[in-house]
Amino acid sequence: MAKVIGYGEIKGEVTLVLSEAEAKALDAVVGYGAASFLKVFYQHLGKAYLEPHERGLKSLFESVRTGEGSVSSFLQRIHNARDVFSGKKNAYEPPQYEAPVAEATQ
Image (cartoon, rainbow, N blue to C red; front, side, top):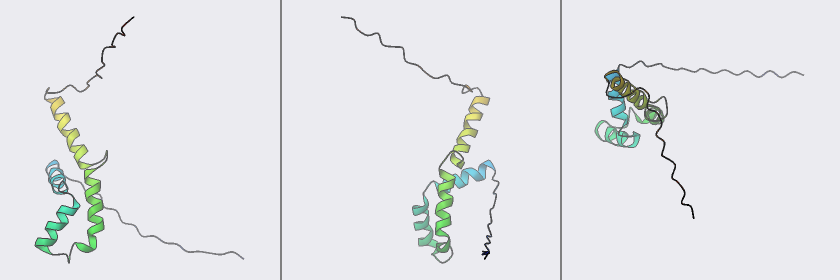
């Protein structure tokens, strides 16, 4: 006889669009690290509101600070693009090769 199993999932995702100034502010806040941020937050504002969301906060801090898609990485790319646009930096920097060292002959 056939067996029917029901399965359901509710998933929510939020896309957050930040200005450059807001991204810099977020990057600065998470720069302290989740542990330091939570310590000070709990000291001054208590645990009642944020403690239930501590795991999500730690995940948010990690996402903002690490990886190719991090806010820090994106802000660095903006900074580099401005340097290229203003002529302070070349858009392409060829790799530097060391001249081969001639072996001593005996």
